[in-house]
Length: 165
Length: 112
Image (tube, each protein chain N blue to C red):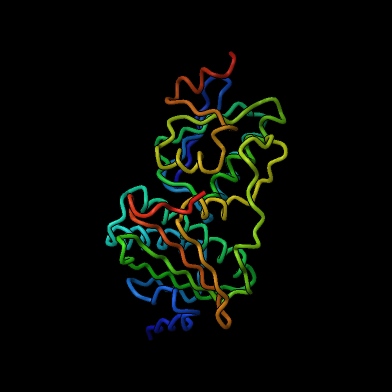
């Protein structure tokens, strides 16, 4: 019997993109699903018209977010993962990632060390969210009911100046 | 993701093809750790066939560099693809890891 994908949680506010575009759903997401996530986001980004650099960036960001979900949110027990990819009206692309793990706000993640940090002082972890922020034009998070909702946005090349640091 | 290991005199060449992510990076970590543990600390990662890495792969490279250098060796990269290079740049790793445009020059960079 084919499981039906659950609807994502209701939109947290009027400025959130409507769930749309193409969806990847895994009821018990695991590390083995990351390749499928990348292929899904790459295809959606291509359909949205992003150039190669934009596609690569969005794919990396989505991989990092989903890896965190699988490794941390679902460390003790697998859970559902939804990845929606949609074209934005300005020619960019939006990727919405929903999980049912404990509350996790990316704003609370400690920033990666500066480039000139001596090798010995660099922590071996902590890079994932740094790469996400470097790769997207906008990163939004909301806790909606029992879900974490992360929205990644990559604007079309030549669009309004990005907020990427 | 495929790994092959080849010894060139005192330098160990680890060729990585495919994609490194949170699923596949562990296998690379294990392979590199085994080389370092065995005293083979002059390592070149040949990345001509590596099409993609996330932070999972970067973590493995960084841990190996630290480990190898602590034992008087190093991990150097050869033939890094543009997409992977971009991620290395974003992470600041290009200031830490020596990259070479081809395998022979990476191997030759270790003193004989």
